[in-house]
Image 1 (spheres, rainbow, N blue to C red):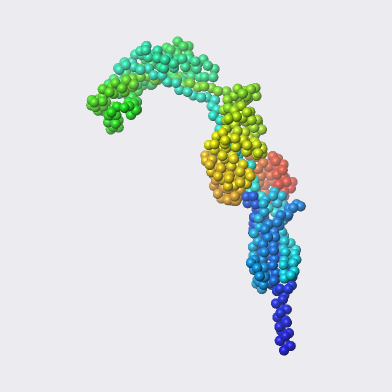
Image 2 (tube, rainbow, N blue to C red):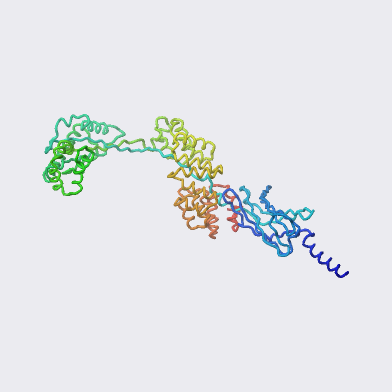
Length: 560
């Protein structure tokens, strides 16, 4: 009887070791963290910590709450806690076997703070075991946050500009027709006196030749004969009409003392079948479809004329309504209106901007690479032309680039109000939404701004902020920008990223910093240091950033 009691007590004692003793401390090598180091995705730092608990460790009556903490500087931020329990705990948490141990995962997520680049990841443990509550020593399971993905953001996208319509040289064509009688090539006096004919053209040419900001680029004469009469006859006739018109223009230009008219050229067309077909198709002639079918069936001009003459019911109408309109010479003067040169526009802005048109002002802003100067020009344009949506939009763009986001938003909204169909304003308001982390609103705004220059970059950054790097890389297309290169880095396409960075039109500090990242990931030590020096020379703050950047953990960048 005593032996049985002794054996019972011994078994009970063994069982109690799985319950009554306190939990031992967790060791750091029980845990693996993915990713290592942690990485920023969008605006967050997500992580998954996996615990591999050894046998006979997790007490059967214990409930353990694990809280991940990121510790940086004097701050620490907790992620959501996860709870696990032993086999004898009556609860709904995942169970870990005492005898066999087990695996459990701890999800974690933090809103990113730049100070987290230099940080440590700890796990805190709070245990409830029966009536006891106690804490176990915290364990370090990670170090640092890779923030390369944050090199892109709404503020790094160049907003869309509304284009000016300024053209320094505006070409205009002025036409006048001289009509001829059937089978005649002489120019009648009545044709020269018509107010809507060559009289008006001659006056326009004379005035243009005498005006400082205009030039007569050239004058061309095209002479025609109507299709009836045979090819041989009409060839001679149309050529005579060409010559008589040419002589007239030469004489008139000399009389008006116009010698700066470029070139005077001429040509003739024996039978104007093209004009004939056009006039017939536009007419109300009853059998015009029959006439047009003849033109399509027969290409030989002699056969065409014969077949149309056979249409006796309509030929008389053609002779009266259509053919007379095809006996003419057309004189075309090409006249250029020459606007202010770039230097003249810049000088006029400084002297008196009010004498510039809105398009000249918008164009003036494109003549400088200094964003502060652009902003000043757009402010003046917005003051002089407050109802032009482009001035509001482009002022907002300059303010956005300067980090004046509230002012930029106000001007983008004004542009959208002045012109609700402005895709530039829609895209730019999408950037404001993305800046404020309204990603759904940004997506909708970008979706309504199809075709805007720069939209690919905006969409690419949107996908980067959503953590969808593959889609981001596709969205950028062939864009040669820092943001496009970042997407390529994030999908590990380093050769393409380097090619994109090499092609950036105006490389800045971020361009060279990204080149250093590519060099670090591909083991090019010399390029790491060279590019970091260039980056730091353009933006001294990048020196401190590089010192804590996990991209350069294997390099001595403290003295770049």
